Image 1 (cartoon, rainbow, N blue to C red):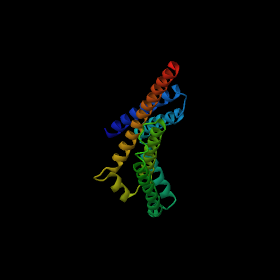
Image 2 (cartoon, rainbow, N blue to C red):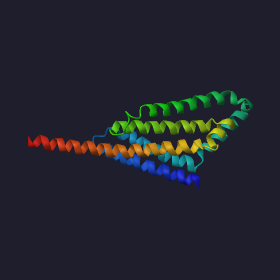
Image 3 (cartoon, one colour):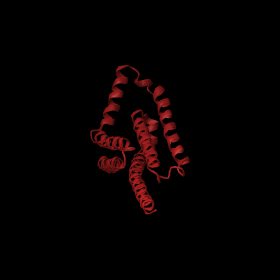
Image 4 (tube, rainbow, N blue to C red):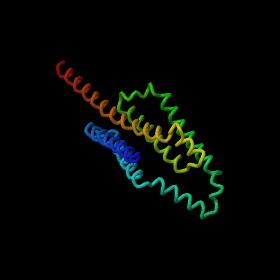
Amino acid sequence: MLNLAASFLYLCVALLCARASIAARRTGGRHASFWTFAAALFLALIVWRELAVEEHLRAMIRDLLRSDGVYADRRTFQRPLAAALLIGLIAVTALAWRFRPAMSMARPSEAVRWAITGILLMSGLILLRLTSFHQMDAFLYGPLRLNWLVDIGSSTLVGIASWRFVRALDRLKMRHSRDERRHHKS
């Protein structure tokens, strides 16, 4: 049931990103390829989740480590990798929080920056889950459900950013039309 709900969220975000891509193409194409990429990414996340690709990759990595005889020592590289990924997630979140007044999503480029932040958070979470070990699992899937918080939060951030991108383009178009009318009247 949770996979279905997450896939539905990803589908909604993908559709919003596709809408932003179309709007960008209609107004000169700036950022259109980014929104197309974002839409494709969220569609890929649906496939990723529904086909349990993450679980299969984790099993493959585990089998590879066992066949190489290093599975028992996996924590020696899992901990630094997980720590680096966690620090990266915290840094992206802190930077987004620090610069949030300057990134109000009032302009199209600001909405794109927020969407990039959401995509980076989602990517970091996926990598963190792939490299996860017992202590990290307890952190991600424990009582706080950090896994859900980052997954839903980053997806929602990208969806809101794409919606705000379209609104910002509409405002720019209306302002440009109004300025043109004033110029023709003069």
